[in-house]
Length: 304
Image (cartoon, rainbow, N blue to C red; front, side, top):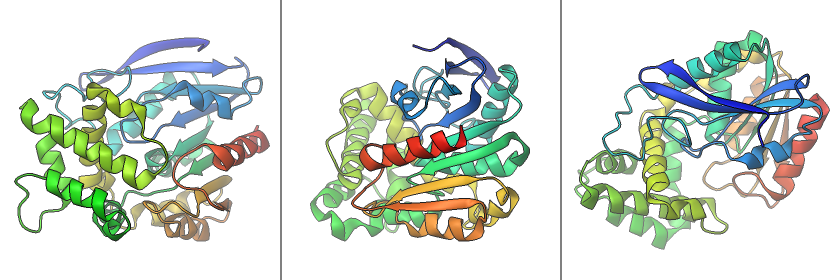
C-alpha cells in the first residue's frame, strides 16, 4: 500500500495520479512506466528496498488513474506529448518537496527518462534504464514493419487490420487514424489488432490487461500517438543529448533477445555516456521479470 497518494492538477485539463511508497527519509526515486499508456503498477515497488528508498509512482497522462483517460474515444491527445510529461515530472517533484532523485524507467519509460534527465540534469542523481529505447522514427519503423519477417502471420494480421490505409502510409499512422475515430466499429477492432501485435513482438504470455477494452483502447491510442511523432524528438536528439548527462551514474539493462528493440540503441548510448554501465542479459527479451528484475534490483541496491 502507498504511504501517501493523491491527484495533482497539472493543467491542460489533466490530473495526475501519484503515490509514494517506502521510507519517509529514504533516497528519493521516481518510476517512469512504459507504453506509453501502461500505467504504474504496484509491481514496480518490488524492485526497491523500501526501507532505503522513497519511491514515487505515477500514471502518465491519459492512463491508469490519471484523468482524462485516453480510453474514452472523445479525449483529445494534443496536450499529451513528451514535453508535457517532462513538465508533469517536475511538477510532481516540486509538489513532494524533492530536490533530486534517481530515475528508473523501462521501455518507453527509458525514452522519457532520457528526455527528462537531459532537460533537468541537475535534478537527477542516478539512472537505471531497462529495455532501452529512444523512440526514433527508425526504431518505430523497425518494430511495426521491419520485424515482419520474424512474425509473418502476426504481422499479416496487423497489416490486414489497417483498413483504409493509403499506399505507402506507415502502419503506425494508419492505426492512429483508426484509433481516434469515434465510431466503435472502427476503433474497437483497431485496438484489438494493435494489442495482438504488441503481444506477438514482445513475446511471452498474452498480456491480460488487453482483455479490458478501456485499457486496450487507451494503450493503443497512446502508443501510436507517441510513436507516429517519434516522441517529438529528432533522429539523434536523445543519443546526442547524452553529453548533458555524461556525469550522471547509470546502469542500462537490455535483453539480447529483445527483437522489437534491438540492443544497438543501448550500445550507442553507453558509448556516448562515460558514467553509464551497459548490461546485456543473455536469453532475455523485452521488459522486466527474471534476470532483468534481478539486474534492476541489484543496480538500485548499489545506488541506495
